[in-house]
Image (cartoon, rainbow, N blue to C red; front, side):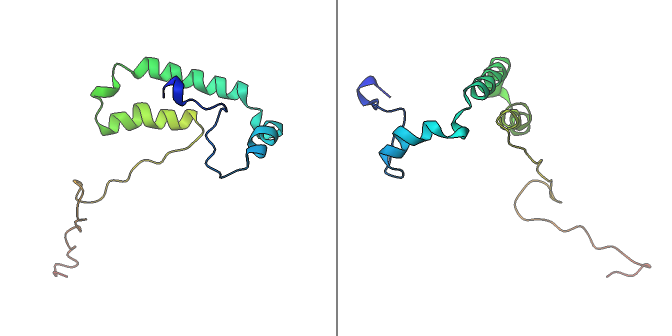
Amino acid sequence: MSQATLSQTPYLNSNLFSGYYLDERVDDLDEWECDEEARRVFEELRSLYDLERELVDSYKEDELLDSWVDEVLDILGFGTLSETTLLGGGGGRIQRPPPVRIGGQAP
């Protein structure tokens, strides 16, 4: 964004909220008092980036998720779940396991 397009306010209001609310009321909200936490989280993200920046381009998907995406989400306070591998692997249509023979009889 060039200097010519910068707004006079620290936000871009798309008329979702009134200008008065954004200019006068938001600063009074308790939730807005998070500067120290935001600095701490930013420093953690910066440290992670400094450690991983040379490697991220070479990561395959699983490495990228484990070493970068999951770590960033954890720092931001979001949990993650591992993907479950489906029978048949490789994506596409799920392959069913072969039928089990019970008592020597084909099902």
